[in-house]
Image (cartoon, rainbow, N blue to C red):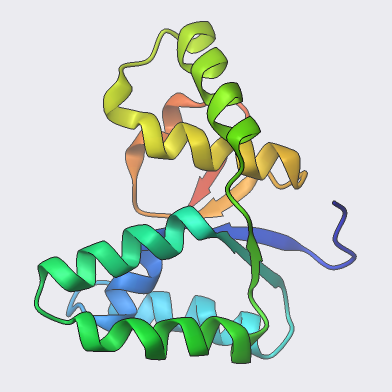
Length: 141
């Protein structure tokens, strides 16, 4: 899968900071999403991220926001990659190769999805992505 404009993957915490109006990171993360809405760069995420966001919102008593979040993804033009069995198989290999703990499982699966889509940069505030040598985490300072 190749994208024509600059593509960046969007991790769950970016959406969560916006949806929960995080006082520290919400505005900066909203600016990221607004650039994608304007077509300045292509946002890409995955069904695994959607599941993470939905679970987090539900745990926080905000389950009613999930449908709005999914509607937003569609309307904003953020591409959603399907999570495949192959992504999980590759994640097992990456965890072994990089000698990582299974505590970073979801992040490794996401990195495998990024690799499949030929995307190296991810908007995230998750430092675990720094453990994956070919992924470049980006977060507003």
